Image (tube, rainbow, N blue to C red):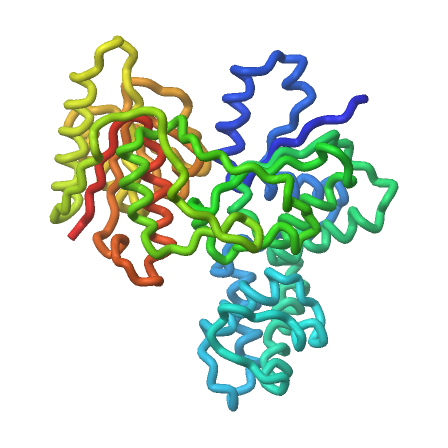
Length: 402
């Protein structure tokens, strides 16, 4: 019939990139039947269509949300002696992630991995902070994103006649979605054959608070999942270097199981990535410029190579861009507003989060040396490095700032 296929993912950049790539593969008629939208854009469209006036909080440091949170913290029980950071993490990882809306639910909620054990009396004393926060947000017409996902999923479930008109939903980068987002995706289409198609990789889970088991979200994957062990993008040398960064990180299979790295392999080969420890951004930029010039000169088939410098922060991304441009190379930054467009003969620059899902012939990763620590605290940083390095198809270099 006239139903569409929704192709969705977590970040806006990647949705734009997927749409551009689909246009090269699909006819205009086929494209007319595909809707490509990252989930948050879909949610805000749904809210606008229903005239729901709440604005979603994506950053708790925003004015209204910050005031709401500070007011809520003022309501905490002083006898508990728990730091503010405990309440922020508890809100994020337990209350919002599990969609808890009542004290009764919170009393029995699983709090695995939270480190602090709370008796029932303590839970009763902690809960008012979260209740106050949601009340403060509501009075400002604001809503936490996980709460918006949960409420929209409930709305869709109760309006059974409200068919959203999707024949199927394809979800890329599944590991970026938390439990409430997965439950919403489940609610957006009736159960049936070929209703939902998920693609994801636990190695690339860089939003660790979003760790969710799909089967707990109503998505039945046991016996229906396939692991893809062949890597078609990255040379085996780059892949090995990237995997070595994950030593000691626990990789999940997007459900309640584990994944291992032994069986994966790449089909192509190339030089082993160079790892250089440099003092400061100027030295990093000098190495990056040299790397671009060497690879450009070694180019044989006449098609210009694509290059990207991937930095750990916008500040270092922009500092390196200035230095590369001063050396006479054109630079294009990949930001939330502007996608990389297929500009050639330029050096692209991106932060590690922005580079997700993209690919380039050659990549230079610039990161603080602390990212290479083996402690559990650096797990997210090492996964970010893994994501950054595996954007490279042919050549890679890692510059660590000492």
